[in-house]
Image 1 (cartoon, rainbow, N blue to C red):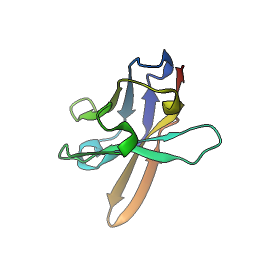
Image 2: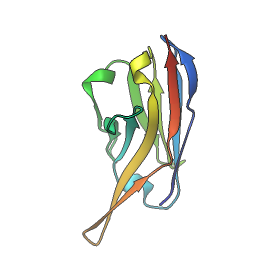
Image 3: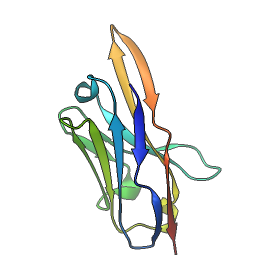
Length: 118
């Protein structure tokens, strides 16, 4: 499995961006996916996750502003980010955990930088 994140950029506070994560491999639809972010010199944190059946979870900081979605026919996951704040500035990474024969494999995309100016 390979993950490729894209869509980051520079945006003013209050603006919007949509991130995309393209996944290779035929197992995409079977497993949960997630977006993490890592601000400069801070730990990586979970932003949102989406189960294979479409169920979603968000960290409190982004509830009501971000929407995670997936298109299993295109092997893609998205993160629609609205009402962006300077504190949303971070490298955003897509992630999945694949379980094969009871063995867990973690996969990370390379990250895309989101910068929100005040």
